[in-house]
Amino acid sequence: MNTEEKQKFISSIIFPTLLVAAMWLVKVVELVLHTSFAPLGIMPLKTYGLIGIVTSPFIHGSIAHLSANSVPIWVLTSMLFYFYRPIAWKTFFLIYFMTGIWVWFWGRESYHIGASGVVYGLASFLFFSGIIRKDNRLLAITFLVAFLYGSLVWGIFPEIFPEKNISWESHLMGLLSGLVLALFYKGEGGPQPKKYSWDFEDDDDDDDDENAYWKLPQKKPKKRRPLKINYIYKEKEKDNQKGASELNSLV
Image (cartoon, rainbow, N blue to C red; front, top):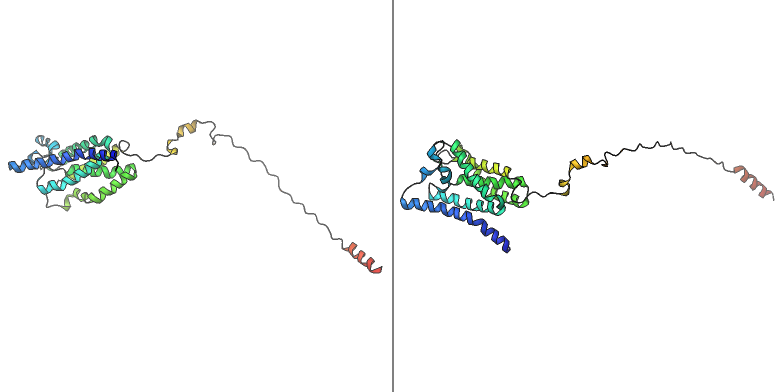
């Protein structure tokens, strides 16, 4: 890894590190104060629940809940800033707010907390963006995300964990927001599909070209004369040879 790549990597992990540190700081404050910030989560269709669109990703129900989200959100956010730097900030915050707003509209009447919706959004964006852009490096990230976090897909089905208090709505809305943004930004930021010389050809120019080969008058094929073959038969001079032999015998 050269110096430029090292600087790019370091700059890519600064924000994810601060983000995860802020989440742990919130949990430490909860433990020190012996309180819960769950009422600051998203309460769907309630005015007081709107604040949760901003605060809910920083609030977790337990240390285990926070630990489960810390590693993936750090890894996925770092990938976003490393491979999609030109659109990383707006992509992250659009996933952040789109997920929260959609949960507020369509979630169950309960407090929704945790950063799992953002995790799903980031994983979805990185997965689908690699497929859409058809870049080998990004496809490698796609397969890596599928390998590391492929099991996340089960989190959007509430029937699988009926006994657990899991906000499957956050998971589903995060997945959808990532997919939407992968399609929206398919031609912006990050590596693009390779283009070849024929991709730059302008078909309109060819249509206007009077000398295009398909517009030139076609020459009529010449009529071919039938081929005649004349055979000439020449008889052998048998009689002459016979007469000569008789003459020789008489001498």
